Length: 463
Ligand code: ASP
Ligand code: MG
Image (tube, rainbow, N blue to C red):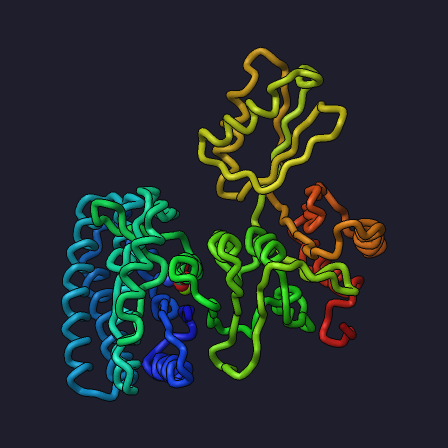
């Protein structure tokens, strides 16, 4: 069971989470708990670290450590009944705050923030949360012990900010966790791992999901439950589409398409371990624990509505590279993609018409400058033109039922057309699980609502 930041937002919430865990435990299930940082803490650590790398600000360091210490001490007092446990957890909090203070002073003096240091600094969120949650569970009668990712064997590569577990990590996790799982509940920090040398790494923002699925796969869990503050995976972002509906069952591939494409509900790499081990995944709402949530399983399920969900990536930029010299020349695409990869630019969508005169590439807006300079360096001997547009967003329409169903694209584009929404770029993989397109930023919300309604995905729709 993994609990997200808003599920463990403060002491009262943590107590509620502890009750969920111990109730499930009393039904006879053995459980490993994975926790995020208290809601907002990761963001605030990142904000402070970045600020200190720009300006020396001793007051900020003091203010941050005091605020975090008070917040976590208060949470521990509210969540944990047993005063001896509270005292132990407070000792841990004090120790952590000393370490954090040193790290922040270092950043501030050096005026430099490496990815490695940022990983260390952000790890404090989870490393403060786990002991509090473990204490709260212990108070309710089942012993619980807090561990960091590294302590249970979540050993990763050195790709700080976006680390990946090494091949033997799962074996080690299994050995560590299963040894004593009948005696106590391990409460593991989400989001963080450790290199072979013991340096803390993180798995990327929202990485606690990924921690949970890595651990679930490692111990061959019967199920993995991700507890969040939403009722499950939704047909669209309810902030955009007020009548968006919860999806009861969805396949791994569909969930993966959605998470890759900006749906905030799952960390994008978190599906890989469950797919490999075919472990059912459930997204559940901490605040409505009796609801079933969304079940994510292997078999794509064909539904009457071929489209299941729509998701959006905002703040994208489109770069177009064109030139007659590119026509019919082998290796053009390789050079373009190679140049972008060398500059670490992630490509979100591509399209090339069969005239081969132009390649269009969608990137994150903050990568735009790097992308342009990478493309500038391509084909020094060919006359080329590079143009870009940065006020665009992308949307993906996902559903396993689209595969082999004629007319889906037709319906999408007619609906957009009759609402005067211009489509700038389109792409569909041959898996047919996903049709993606780029529209102007100003049209994006309207586009999502139009397609959502066209396929009857809303609350009022019968399914
Ligand atoms: N605390 C980390 C974050 O906010 C990891 C997580 O919550 O999953 O990104
Ligand atoms: Mg979080």
